[in-house]
Each structure stands twice: as C-alpha cells, then as structure tokens.
Amino acid sequence: MTDPATLEVTIVDGYVDEPAHFGVPPYISTYPRYVAGALVDAGVPRERITYHTIDALREENSRWRAVADADLTVYVGGMTVPGNYVGGTPAEPDEVRRIAWTAEGTSIMGGPIRFGVGEENVGASETSREDLDFDFVAGADVEAAVFDLVENGLEGFEPRYRGVPEETRWARQGAFIVEQHPNHPDYLLAELETSRGCPYRCSFCTEPMYGDPDFRPPESVVEEVAALSEHGVRHFRLGRQADILAYGGDGEKPNPDALRSLYRGIREVAPDLETLHLDNMNPITVVKWPEKAREGIRIIAEHNTPGDTAAFGLESADPQVQSDNNLNVTAEECLEAVRIVNEEAGWRPGEDPADAPTFGEEAAPRLPKLLPGINLVHGLKGEREETFEHNKRFLRRVYDEGLLLRRVNIRQVMAFEGTEMADTGAEIAADHKQLFKQYKRDVREEIDNPMLQRLAPPGTVLEDVHLEYHQDGKTFGRQLGTYPLLVAVPGERQLGATIDIAVTDHGYRSVTGVPHPLDVNSASMDELQALPGLGRQRAGNIVVDRPYDSVEEITAGDLSKFAVARRSE
Image: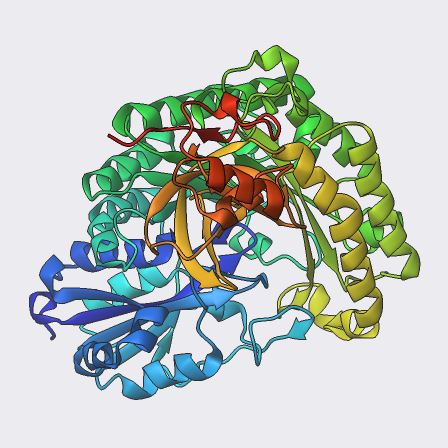
C-alpha cells in the first residue's frame, strides 16, 4: 500500500472554459485548488505537491522533469466554450497526450475535458471522448477521484461527485496552491463556485450534466475567500454558477437574503479585496421574479467593484431557434431583464444610484457597477438566415432604448456527447460560416463600437490596468475582472506594471488610453496626440511651449479630464 506521506504529486493546469466556469490566466479555476486540497486531506504533505500551468511548461522545458518524476500526475483542463484568450493559451490535445507520455508514475486527467476533445479548441467543432493515453480519467469530479485514488494506494477509484462538506474542506486546504501560479500575487483572479448544475436544459450546454443546482452555504464560500486571502489573493469572481440570482434558493427563484449573507461575508473576511465580480445571471429569473431580482441586483451592486458584468444567456433572439433548442428566455423577456439591471446597477461610483443608467458628458468618469452582457450562440438547431437578422434587431433595440451592455459575446457552438446538439454536430455552423462572418462584422461596427463609446466615454478612468504585451509600438493591458476591456497605451511601457489610464478613443471591443493623469510637461508626442482634439500639429505646439503651470494654459480644448501640469523641482 502506497503511503500518501511519501508521494510526490504534480498538478498540470491546462485551463478550463465552461458555460459557468473559467480558468484561463489571469484566472485560476477551482479545479487545481480543489485537487490540491483533496491531496492534503488524503495525507499528501503540501511540500510534496507541485503545480504548473501549461504555459509555464511551454516556457521552461525543465519543468517537465516534475511531470516525469512524479508518483502521481494530475491533469485538469478542458474547453466546452470556445474563446479568444490574451493571458494564456489553453492546452491542445497533443500537448495533453505529451503530459501522459512524459509521466512515469500514475497519471489521471479530469475536469471538463471528460465531456470531449476536439482537434482544436475552436467553435463550430465536434468532439469525442478520449482518454488521451492517461492511466485514469475522472468520470465525475476530478478532486474526488484524486482523493479516492490516493486513499486506494493509486490502484483505482469509482467515479463520484463530492459533496458540500468535502468541497468546503478541500477549497480551504487547497488555497495554498495559488502561490505557485506564475501570476501570483498581483495578477491573479480566483474563480469561486457558489453552485453548479442548472434547472434548464438548453440543447448545447454541458452545465445540466452536473444535475440540478446544488448550492454551497455562504459560510463555505466565505471560508474559501478567507483562506485565499491569507495566501495573497485580492481578486475574486463568483463565476462558477449558472445563475447568481438563484443562489441559496430553490434553483430558480431569487433569494436576496442568501446573496446578502454571501456578499457581506466576503467583504468582512477580505476587506482589502481589489476585485469582486460575478459572471452568469439568468434573464428569465429577472423577469419572472422582478422585485426579488431587483433587490438581489441592488445587493450585488452595493458590495461589488465597478466594471462588473452579468452574462445573459439569450443565445438566440430567433423564436424558431429558441423552440428547437429548449432556450428559456425570449428576446422580449431578455430586453426587460436588460432594462432592470441597467436601472438597478447601471450607476457609476460617485453618482446617485437612482440616476442609473448614466452615460454622456455628465456621467461620472468610472465604469458602471454592474451591467448585462449578452451571449449569442450560432450553429444551433433551426438556425436560418433570418436568425442573424433577429439577433441584430434585438441588439439595435437595446441600443436605441438608451441602455448599456458591457459586451456582446458571439460564438459558434461546440457539440458534445450527452447534449442534444451531439446529433446535429457542427453541420449548421459550417454551412453558415460566411453569413456568420458578415453578421459578426455588422455587430462589431453597428453595436459594439457605439455601445463602447456610451459605456466608457473619453475621460473615463480605468484603474489598475495591468500591462501585458507590446504590439505595433503600443502597450496592451487589462484590468482584472469579468470581461475586462483591452486597453492600448501609446509607446512600449514596462510589462507587468500597473497604471491608471483615461480612455481617449474606442475600437470595437477595446479602447485607447493614456496614463492618468497625464503630465503635459513630460508626456511623449504619441501620448499627447492620443488626447481627443489634438493632432500632431497641436501636440507639437504643446511640446514646444512647455513647461506649463496648469493645463488651463493650453488652448487646444479642455484637457482637465486627462492631464495635469507638474513643474519639475
């Protein structure tokens, strides 16, 4: 019998992206943390547990030695929702196989990868269930499988799901693993689970495979936040649930008291947190129970940090597609839910919440507290040419009513065994490929760009933007949070630094900005040219006439939202 105290264990994080769970950096999902906690609970000493991201393995070949030498290698990963990623690149199937081939000890894989693997992590694709040459595949919870595997001397286990007591224990005991993440501590956001499973059965979604919603009590989540805080985490997202408003209730109806206990508890144990965001909110919950939903939304907006997003799974505004795929909300209902979130949480710090939603020159120069985001999926059963027009018409109505959306997420379906879309596969998405491309361009030009100008007008301040990469003479960065705006700053600045920026211009899904406040007496030509109303000539005149005692001395428009004038000693 293998003694757990003698085991050397390596956890490899290939990243996850599920309908209600995200783990691509700067996020860290629950999976590696819970696996680490299960290992400790089974008797493996912390110091014998090593954690690596797939990107770290790519960048440092010597890290593969930890995979080769481990008595037990645990791989967690899997994409059931396709996306575009900046902070990390999810593992491809061939890389996952290499992990299995490299591991000389026992190997096990788990996470959403158990639902299926495609040739690539892209939309409009079909998947199949494969073991990718691992000794074991966790057919249910990977953390439960790892616990039982260690308990059984690495000889096997029966697939099972863990319960709330185990989750509470493993979440707390596994928090230490965050210190081994390459982004720790400054640029790391911990995904938190409040529940999993869903009462609805949309045709393409893998979340119902977890069953009906099963909620963690507030104290379980709060204990996890406290443990993560002790290990240096300051950024959190309540992203692991199908519907945050249903938290602590019967799975469908809002429970404002449970939300209040959850959010207050988090704020009490992590008073210095810097990000508290969420992800999924079901629009049908908002319209079926509007008063309780409004109360819950107000509670969230009271305790969260600005720039938060409630992702709405409209999926399609086409009634035929809605019917054929068991979608639970109509376009009209979703529009009403958008109105309600705007009214209750679309205010900006420094404003009266009763004035929400606000935009334009009179709006405070911060992002709103909480806004809806719209998810649209293409390639579903029943999709036709009219489907694309239905969706565009819905988005135009949102904009024309003077409402705000944080973002519109358009993707093509991935078909997984066990879902109704498995029979249809990616055939419809492939047939509509050209329609999809043109439609996506239309939405970006007609909706995304003007909506972004409304959301973050020039002068809006984005605090703590983390600078990530250089491209075309600019530095790109993001805030930590749910669907953060990509920001381009003129010049090549030090990567890894954190700065405040003021928005100066808008793309389709990104903004340009300058450091805030910008010192006109030391700013570069590129930075000055980025200010609204200043071209190269005016920027050159400012440089020639420096130094200034105040920005009011500059006659090229009102620069007070963006700049100051500092005289050197």
